Length: 284
Image (cartoon, rainbow, N blue to C red; front, side, top):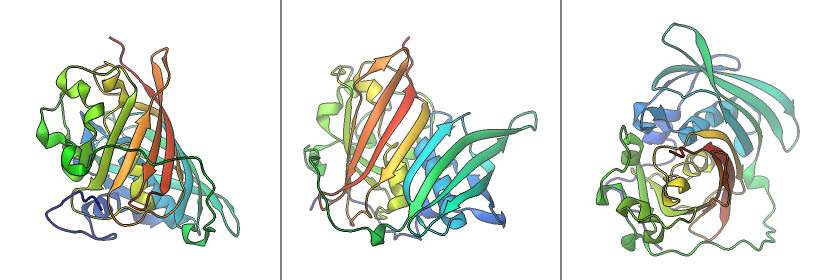
């Protein structure tokens, strides 16, 4: 099995990702967190990290702990620093519970600003039946040692890329033309994915994984970051230990917006998560 190497092996519940997504319950349904600067790209906090933060709060507020589907609207860019999360339980059932959550920060004038709002349904992934009927096939790309990470070349965008230090990300060379000044024109991005400290994936880190790769817009010849407008993630099963494979495609860029469809596959060739996001592309 391919390995994404790390200097030390962290475990689920005791890793940098767990510490940086940990929330403190202030009162029922209300949580505090200090958003880490370690998950920023350019000047904003990564959307997948933010989704994991809200996902952790909802997992505490709801009677079920595993996200099945979670949809987020990104209203304003989040900054490192203090934030508060307010959750509401909408419905609880035997197999699914549904809730919503919003993350707030203060702007430079001291006014409270909503950064992101999510609606999610949670359940128990371990209670799902094993029956799988699918035409989906795992993506093929070279083994880890033939792929490339951030340390193998210059950063193509200005500003913070702190998140790359927290990830063990190895990109398929076929989707790396943008880094060499020769983008393919195809809306494709593929990579091996892991956390830099060796922590295995769980349902919460899948919320990060779907938004952790460089945007497909780079391979379409566009420059600059691509802010997420809306992101929906479906978690299909609990991932097996080992590195993940992520494939992202864009079929349509129109009016300055594009969609990104992601599939996440685990080391046992199971489709463990799917997502679609709408993002704004810089056209000039």
